[in-house]
Length: 117
Length: 114
Image 1 (cartoon, rainbow over the protein chains, first blue to last red):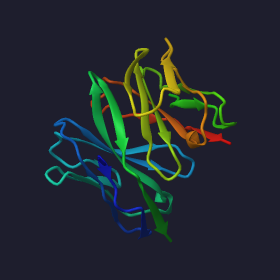
Image 2: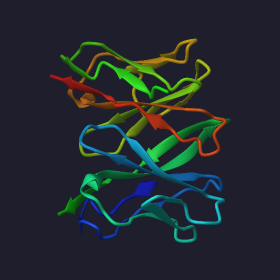
Image 3: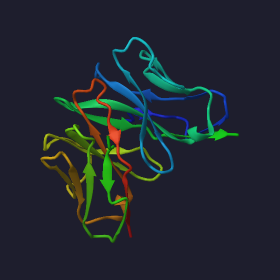
């Protein structure tokens, strides 16, 4: 079963506008974490933002914010004031416990964001 | 501080050959994870090592193996290469003491099997 679902294969946004990238997840573990990563064409995964399952407030990091709706199991990424350099693939990922302190990340299929000038 | 480093950056192998990929974690990080990212997909978890012990394994065949050394660097080995093993192999390091268990990724090794 798909644990992380990103339903938008591609998105376009005009420069300086805001954009929301969708992510839904499925887990029975009460303790989990949700991450968003940016992957430019170079291939490196760049950490953007993190939300823990017990965090009461939505996470924010500069122009990035995470709209966390626990009951709906969604963790959408909002990018404000888009810049041309934001064009990249964006992945939502969930941290799952393997055993003890071991953790793995399960990734969605990604959303290709293109910022238009 | 240096980030996660991986070598080589690119590699071309023939079906049936064996390959070894290397990863050096961020200084102080004792956990290393390996992921395979096939073109057009998200990364898939292969292994996690902590303190030289395997702590987790994804749904990959026994042709895939790994190990972690006393300095916490790691190697991923793939035997009897198949065309489907062509992918970007990502290494990530983390420190279990961090509350978010954030994983820091290296630039990856692009493996092409012909």
